[in-house]
Length: 329
Ligand SMILES: NC(=O)C1=CN([C@@H]2O[C@H](COP(=O)(O)OP(=O)(O)OC[C@H]3O[C@@H](n4cnc5c(N)ncnc54)[C@H](OP(=O)(O)O)[C@@H]3O)[C@@H](O)[C@H]2O)C=CC1
Ligand SMILES: O=C(CO)COP(=O)(O)O
Image (tube, rainbow, N blue to C red; front, side, top):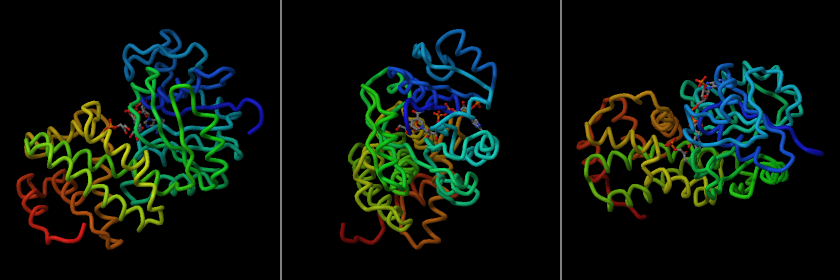
C-alpha cells in the first residue's frame, strides 16, 4: 500500500469506534467510521463522540463519520467490526462497494453459528479475490479509545501483509503484533469468550479463585487442541490472542462474557443476553458441535453450551467435570 492508506471501519459499535479512533489519532491518517444508520453518523459528527457505545470518550478531530457506502470505493483497508453472526450479511451488503484490491480485516471474535465456519472462511467465500485478515487479542474498546496501552494481533495468510497492517494500524498506545496464523488468532478470540463465561459461572456460583485458575489452564488446553485440529499453529494459543485475551476476559468485570457467566452462575440458568452482545453464547454451541465432529475433547466448552441451552444445571456440570478420568496434564 503506497502513500497514505485510506481506512474505513464498518460497524460503529464500541470496538469499531475504538479502532477508528486509534487509527485516526495518527498524523496524516485518513479514517472513516461507517455506520449503517445515518443518525449515528450525524450524532458522532455533531458531538465528536459515540456516546451510546463509548460514553464520555472524545474521538479524534480527524475521524470522519458516514453512513454512505460510497466511502468504501476508495478504501485500501476495510475493518469489519460488526458481530460475528453479522459478518456474512455485512460482506453481502458492502462487498460490491469495496475495491477488489482492498484488504479486509475481520475484527469479530466468533465463528458462524449456522455453518460452524471460521469468519475468514465466510469472508473468503463472500469476498473472493480480497486479502482477508484478522484482528484479535486482549483489549477492551473503552481502554483502546481512551488511549490506555493495549497490544493485540493482526494476522494474514501472508506474513508480509500482516506486518504491513500492523505498521499502519498501530499507534503510540495501540500496538499490533503481526502473525501469519489466521486460524489460531481468530479461534483464540472466539474460544476465550466461552471460557470467560465458564469463569463467570464459577464466580457467580461462588466456587472460588482456585477453580478459576483451573478453568483458565484447562481451558487453554482445550483451545490448543481445537486450534490444532482446525489447522492453526500450536504456539499461537500462548500469545496475545490466546492466553492474553483469555486472562483479560476471564478476570475483568468489563467483560460482557464474564458478566453473562456470573449471572448464569448466580441463577443456575440462562436469562438471555440482556440486550448486550455476548459472543461466547453463540461460540459455545458452535465450538462444541464442531469439536464433536472433529473428535476433539472440549469438556468445558461442552458444559458451557449445555448450560446455556438449558440442558444442564451448574452443579451437575461441575460434578461431571470433576469426575472425569484423571489423565496426564
Ligand atoms: N467491545 C469490545 O471491547 C471488543 C469487541 N470485540 C469484538 O468486536 C465485535 C463487535 O463488538 P462491539 O463493537 O463490542 O459490539 P456493539 O454491540 O457495541 O456494536 C456492534 C455494531 O455492529 C453494527 N452492526 C451489526 N450488524 C451490522 C451489519 N450487518 N452491518 C453493519 N453494521 C452492523 C451495529 O450497528 P447498529 O448500532 O446499527 O445495530 C453496532 O454498531 C464482536 O465480535 C466483539 O467480540 C473485540 C475486542 C474488544
Ligand atoms: O474481547 C474483548 C476484550 O479483549 C471484549 O470482551 P467482551 O466481549 O466479553 O466484553
